[in-house]
Length: 228
Image (cartoon, rainbow, N blue to C red; front, side):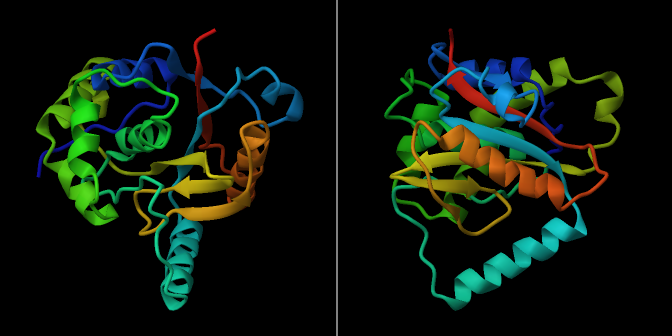
C-alpha cells in the first residue's frame, strides 16, 4: 500500500489542497485560536465546518467502540442527506476531513469541474465504506494531496508516518450538528443547531474532546469560512 504523509494542521496546506480539488477561492480554512467566547467572535461567519485535530488514544478508541455498539444495537441508519465516508488508507484523515467539510456544503460552495466534483458525482448513492474505497482508488485526488504534503512537510516527516493524531469534521445539516469521523461507521448526531449558533455548539463538543484528555496539548481547530 502506498505510504501517505499525514496532512499538516495548518490552513495554508489545507487551502492549497482545497484549490487543487476545485473549491471556490471564496472559501478557505482559518485557525480557531481559542474556544473562548471572545475568540470565537473573531471567526468570520458563516462557519460551514469545524475541523478538530486531536490525539488518538485508548480513551478515544473505547468511546468509538461503545458508540458503534450502541448505534448498531439500535439499528441505526446513517442519514441519507449527510455525506460520510469511511477511512481506508492510513494518514488520509486530513483530506477526508476536508472532503466532509465541502461535500456537506455544496449548497454554499461552488465547485469547479475537476477532482472533487468528479468524486462526488461518482460517490452518489454509495454507502460510507464504498465512498472510502472510491477515494482510495481516486488516484488523482491522492496524488494531488501527496504532492502538496511532500512539498510542505519537513525532511524528517518522510522517515516515519506513525499515526498519533486524527482529524474529525463538524457540520450542521438540516438543523442538526454532526460529527464526521472516517474511523467511525456512522455520523454522530450531537443535537440541534443552526447557522448562527453552529460554531458555539461545535466548540462545546470540541471542549468535551479536550476534557477527555487532561494534560494533552495535541489539539488544533480550524474553520471553513468565507474569505473576507
